[in-house]
Each structure stands twice: as structure tokens, then as C-alpha cells.
Image 1 (cartoon, rainbow, N blue to C red):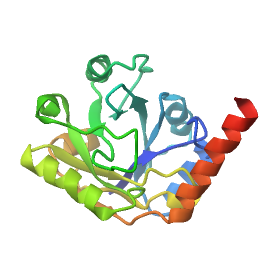
Image 2 (cartoon, rainbow, N blue to C red; image 1 turned 60 degrees about the horizontal axis):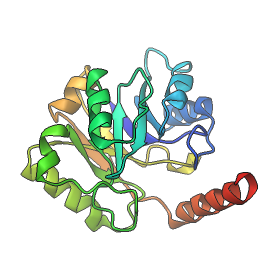
Image 3 (cartoon, one colour; image 1 turned 90 degrees about the vertical axis):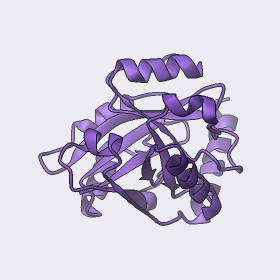
Image 4 (tube, rainbow, N blue to C red; image 1 turned 30 degrees about the horizontal axis):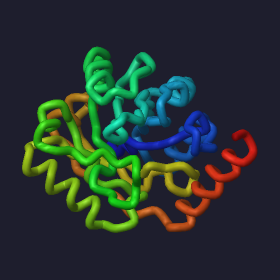
Length: 213
């Protein structure tokens, strides 16, 4: 079973994708499920869940901005309101969610959360492959950190456009996906996104800033 655990819909400030279309494309590309991880909201995940079926699962998540950087929570049922890193971690835990640090060592992203020893006990997983990491060394650093501290490793496309869906993710034989992730009973796969997608995202952000302020 293959899951892409990092996808953005139009509910993200830098997203455009319709949740129903995300599900349709993901199924076409042979995925068993996806996590919708919109910026600071779970609305996209709930919308996408309307289109799941017995053979395809949608996991509700969010990529939350904190003062330390971005944190992904998956298996969420309520919005995370805080931007304080410790509050965010507590609120994810209270929902029995899983805490993932996405693209942690990507020096080209101001939003990256650089995990240190003090945060290891609060982290469940490190994203070991993010398709939007321009340089593979950033993904390798993430994997190295996870292995050093015995953390689970996940992966995701970080898709903002249809051509990116399924570019990265995890493979598992375990039926209970939550258990498989926490026990690190998964294998990651992935390929890097084309640079044009980065350019399109920057253009979209600029257009929205100039149009809507």
C-alpha cells in the first residue's frame, strides 16, 4: 500500500487543488491513500474525506506554522489554533495525532523547523523525503537525524499542483497505517519535483498578495 503523506489543496494559502480532483488523481496513480496537510487548517482534509472509499483512505492533517518552523500533524479531528510550538505539539497529542517534522534541514525554506536534541522526545517522525527539496542533501540530513534518534521516517510529495501528486510517500504492508508509521514499519519512495513547480508557487503567492493584499 502506497500513501503520499504531504499534499496541499486549495484550502492552503499557496494551494489551488480541488480536494475531489486530488483524490481522483491519486487513485489513478495507484496510491492507497493520501494525507491532506494544508497550511494551518484541516478543512481540505475533511473535504477530501467525502471522496474516499473502501480502497482509498484520506488522512486529515495540517502543516502548522510555529515560531520555530512548520510542524505537520496527521490523524487530526480539530483545528490547531496556536502558533506556539509547545501548544501545537500538545494539541496534536491530545487528538491522538502523529507529529511529523517536514523538510527539516532545507536551508532554502525559511519555514523549516530545525530539530535539536531538546525536541527529540516530542517528535514522532521526520520527513525523510520531500519532493520539493531542491537538493537531495537536505533529505539525506533528515534521514540521518531520524536514524540517529530512532525516529520514524515518512515521505511526501508536498504537492501543490496535480503533476506532483504521488511523487513521494511511504509503502507498508501493515493494515493499520497509524501503527505502521509509529513503528517505522514503512519504506519511503520519492522523486524530486520539477523546478517549474517552485516558480509557479512563487508566482501564485505574488499574485494573491498583490490582488488580495
